[in-house]
Amino acid sequence: MFCFLLLFIVISNAKQYHMCMIMLGAPKEVPMMNYSVEYLLNAYERKPPEIVIDHFYFIKGCNHCSHPEMEIANFELQKHGINSSIEQFEPFKWIQSSNIYSFEEMYHSLWSEDQRAYRNFGHHKKDNIVTYYFHQGAQLALKEFNNTDYIMFFEDDQSIHRNSFVFLKQVFDSYGPRTLTKYATPLRATNDGYYDPNVACIWGWWGTLMSNHELKRYLTFIKFNPWTYCGDMLFCDLGKLIDQPFYLRRMARHFGRDKDIVPKDPDYY
Image (cartoon, rainbow, N blue to C red):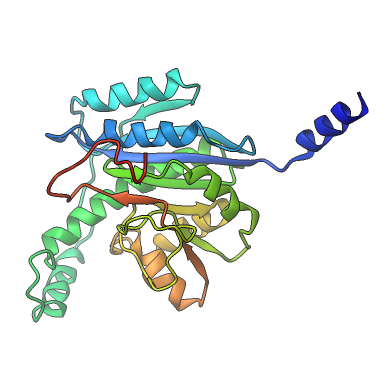
């Protein structure tokens, strides 16, 4: 009886980590979102009890479109006891300032020597549209769960390792007041704890994890730079600027550009 009470006290006093998750998606020919949710739910079955998902937000990256995959994904999460919802925000309006034309000219001049096809202003605008929807989702999450500890961002085409939540708890246990975390990288999983010390910066919103404090600071900073290059600024620019350390954990993979997409990749599922 005493041992049972002691165990109950230990469990009751265990620190909990609350988090919200945000996934942005638009209709695709391949049901990538459903694949991603399959990985997520497989990892969720191994989730430590200390991690509590306050809410999972599906964000439509298209204007009032039909997205059956997202509806199925939302249903699957709810069926497994995860609070989730589908959110639709007002369309992104790129032309918001008369300065945008001079900004476009400056952008083209900066990249005039760069021959890579994606280094153009149109691609930059697309990245800012993605950023806009993630910002809207993050602000909604903070409005509804202002005290949640962490916010994690997903795109709709990433595998998630089956032990991701186990590794995530390890990150939370050692998370410092000035620490940024990148949860996923395009690299394959290894047997060394899924950590890659040789990668200094990974571009993209997918797999980004922010503490409540970091997210609020980021949203404040972004007011003064409305045309930032996606969310990458936080990890690849701002982090270096203020000399802030961050983790890179190889716990997921971005499969959206794979030639042959394999559902339930055994390396991750």
